[in-house]
Length: 166
Image 1 (tube, rainbow, N blue to C red):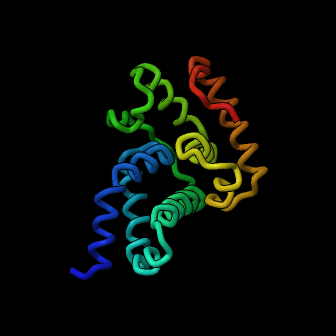
Image 2: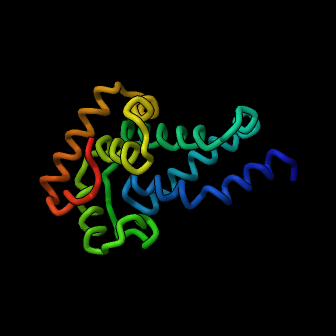
Image 3: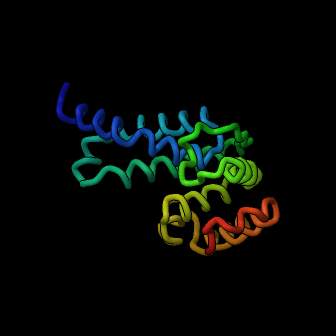
């Protein structure tokens, strides 16, 4: 095994759980999340030598993940199916009823709204970073965030205690 392949395997071994969590938050389905991560990693593997030559591969791989997600919902208008997630998917939400409420509310958002919330509040990206990753304007990120949060407040007022303010 050469050094490039070894580097890629080490990266995947270390970052796979985090990438799966992010993908699950984007698509709301464990199996689709695995497909999304697999697609992103296969694209990264083809360019791995150039990616690691630029430094930290994490931003590049995550960008592939986000842009691939955007391509999916642009091409196919995926129907979101939110199934019960494994316990580690939303480990920051300890309260099980709150986690279930959050999962159900997220399932009712559009793919773009869900993507914006994941990027802004789970990945903690700025509006401009989220806009760049999604290939939309900052205004679109702002409006989608506003609509998504308003919809969450309507769908599940009990989520108001979560720290998600624009």
